[in-house]
Image (tube, rainbow, N blue to C red; front, side):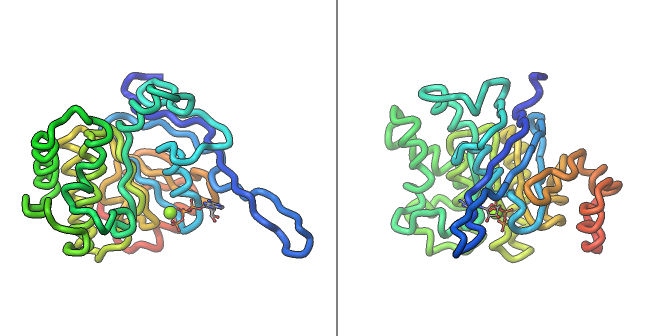
Length: 266
Ligand SMILES: Nc1ncnc2c1ncn2[C@@H]1O[C@H](COP(=O)(O)OP(=O)(O)OP(=O)(O)O)[C@@H](O)[C@H]1O
Ligand SMILES: [Mg+2]
């Protein structure tokens, strides 16, 4: 294992119970994520692409430890991330954050934006004074392109793209090292989505983030990814540097995905 690796994942697997017949009462388990292994270096953007139901969100939730895998290993900066518990788990948790697909559903509609974005700070850095917390929130809102007046307003007063900026500000307020964005632009118009992707890329550079960008859309992934994983039926069927996967795909499924898109930004 090299120090450059921020995340190493080995043989991650997750299955869910599925009922196979209403009358037979028989049930089995469907495998949502199967034998997924990869390593990611600091500062990279891993794009994970695959059709609906292939296991992208299940994988993302395991990477965040929102759900536990059936088996496998995960190391975050060399530490046993899957085995972490107690104080170590809490300390690691704040270093890995998620941006969600649906900013409306993921933001508490009754809270003002300042409270929404400041909440992780209130939990993880309770020693900060109100003024210090407010200053951190205001700076983060500015970094995502929202004015200071956003602090006192409510999520419904913003457009979809602005709401996703609020979601990004909340994810970044604790200064995480790894950010997993699960379909961050699929609820947005293409042009608004492109601006959000540009924002994520700029923040990655400015804040030295490593990014995992999950999308069913190959052009979305191609816009930012330095590495691409193609997922099919729970498995990584292709994984490599973005140029290699996009220009010279080895796998038939990847070739079909690329053939379906007229122009991939090189
Ligand atoms: N909590 C759960 N209980 C049972 N089955 C689940 C659960 N979560 C996911 N699954 C199943 O696991 C598989 C993968 O689902 P997942 O949500 O990870 O796919 P996805 O690639 O994110 O799809 P989409 O592009 O539609 O978001 C699907 O068959 C889904 O039905
Ligand atoms: Mg999903």
